[in-house]
Length: 254
Ligand code: ADP
Image 1 (spheres, protein in one colour):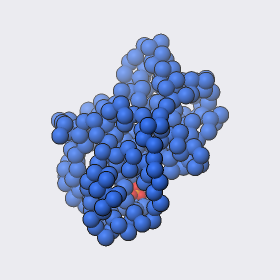
Image 2 (cartoon, rainbow, N blue to C red):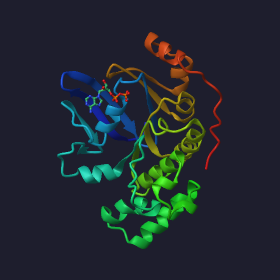
Image 3 (cartoon, rainbow, N blue to C red):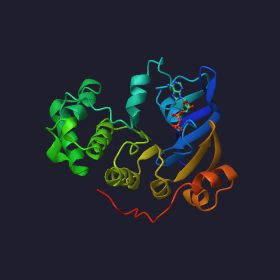
Image 4 (cartoon, rainbow, N blue to C red):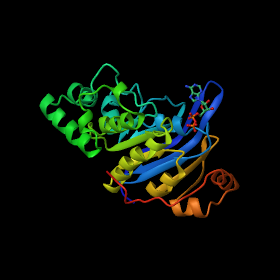
């Protein structure tokens, strides 16, 4: 398999006495789409947040390439540029235009020329069908549009890995597809992504590898075909029984 970008090595994450991730290890390889599924509260979001240093861990180690992922590490800003994250709640600045939201970090952190940053932001907005919104403010956009902008904002930093934390969970059903289509398109282009989702049809369509998490550890891991068609554990079988599956068109895109 291709090179390892993120190595999660026997990590333990606790909130007070609550052990949320318990001696968990996994690797994210360049070019793969890793989908993390599991029941609510099993630690998916926490796991994702540890991967770019948003949550401290109590034991074990996480590295991005040869760099230790740790908020106290001097490399953390660089790591967070390389390991981008998209959140359920968009996290756009309400007082800034869409274009300014997208160009803020490239200009401030990466010291890009404004003109160059704006051109790139416009190209990305065009790709997700939102170029006409560049001067609008977040409040003027639908949830699905805001989330597409949040993805563009992450892409503008040229991350090597993108982490998606339940990015459609707050959206009305009719807006889910437009966001998932953007992610499917990124997958087709070979982006390295770790995706936490409850959208099982999407997970099945987009994943190269699926990890099933329960009670803070990996219970099952495999290809989407193996996991969805032939789950090995009772826990995974039970989990999958709560979803209905349909045919997803992997060719749909932006
Ligand atoms: P999932 O994403 O699988 O739904 P989370 O990672 O959000 O699960 O949460 C895992 C566990 O960690 C839950 O028991 C949750 O209550 C707890 N937890 C998450 N964030 C915090 C926090 N900031 N403080 C205390 N406990 C937390």
